Length: 197
Image (tube, rainbow, N blue to C red; front, side, top):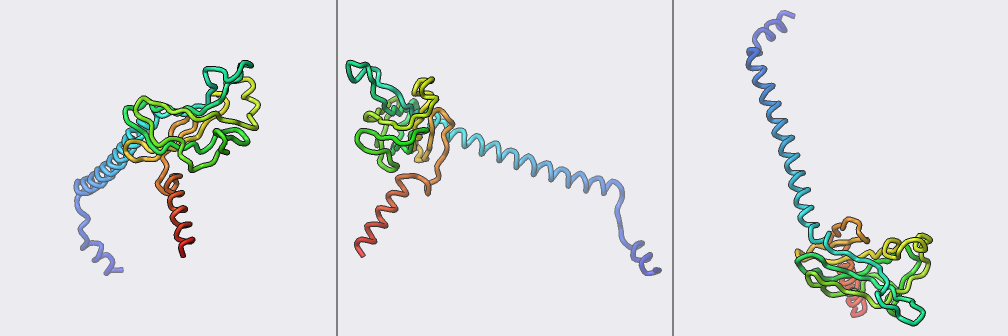
């Protein structure tokens, strides 16, 4: 017991001012770390917003032709992709027309991986061949087709970033492994090497 008192007496605990200084230094370090993390998140948010600026200007709609195709007044449906940005987009693909059971563009059944358009210039648009839809949702009877049926598209912006968008929903960034053309090129190359061997 006597040795523990001697040991406790020999330790220098410092003055109260030193303690407050140490606590203040730790607090300042914690606040600086919090500010750095917050600023990093804000920069990431700003970067993502800047990346999506062009993507928000690309809109795909399913619309009736303006002119009827016959005397009965029937009009074709078409997918229109408009690029309202100031830079071109490339590798435009229609992934899906939703919410329908099936869809066909021209004579081809709708399927992923066949490019709809190679490029759309700034301020331009491209229009598909007539679209045939089966299994329209009930809501399509009471709303204009543009508000009931949506095209899900994928495209590459002028910075090489791949985006996906459904109707007027916010565009979603697609990572390189999930880009349709990248997957198809890989599969075509893999199938070619298998058939060669």
